[in-house]
Image 1 (cartoon, rainbow, N blue to C red):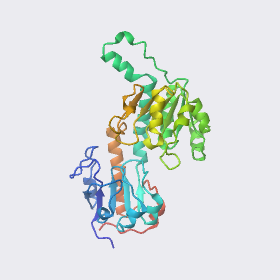
Image 2: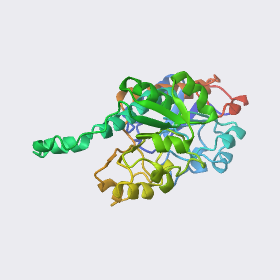
Image 3: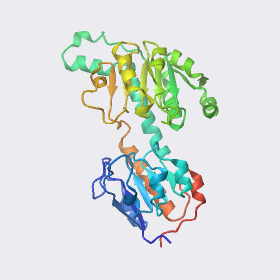
Image 4: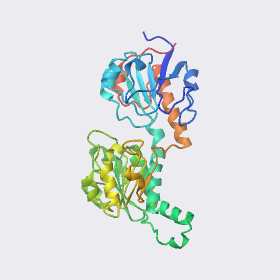
Length: 340
């Protein structure tokens, strides 16, 4: 039987030894009040935690994007739960963890609106040429104010690739702006698209018709670098790309080239590949791109709601209750010890 108290390891990326995170205080004392103990783990030497660092823990609160593979969890037989502080789970082998009886949870409801709002923020900034108008005003070029007229959104086509909970919320937020919203025709998207009243198009038609292409898709082996040179060439030269999902969806050198030679009009990127970008990355110096540091959705409500969901899942699993958002529910077939 796993010894008590139930122990939670908090990954060290962006976390101080006292549990203060780059998001601020996420309320780890809630774990203590529920009878769980927690501590910050040693910093990972690479992309995955060392098996020996996982050995003391029943659960891991994964603040960053460490990889959890079959080999890692096989060497940590005590581990029963990986709780993602956020929605993304690329790098986590869900089937391997289910085989080992390790449930993985995330916080999709808490992330949905802040991330969708971030996508719309970038879209609006591009549509109204916010950065160019700001620079003209602050540098005394008031006489140029008619030079930076944006394309606007009304009557334009917005193509959303990835109609999950975030993509669907982007569509809802855009509804009052008078845009035509379309999405990629996939079996998993059809029912949701019908509910939202938006059209499903083959990917090539979506790319060719869209004035704004918004990426909210998951990063998988098949979606990696889906936005490549051919994809960008098929876009309108007046079109914009918005990515709030994962940097790996985009072939970044190809995007840099397309932005530099005017093949597309611009881009709004909250995610890059790699992160942080390499010093001197030419993408960062282009005038037609807005780049934010994978943090645009980190509002106060994001932190509050993600923390509440994530900590709630840790407490539920520790006490033998089904968590709200299991990504590999087959792992829940395992009977776990509970906290005394």
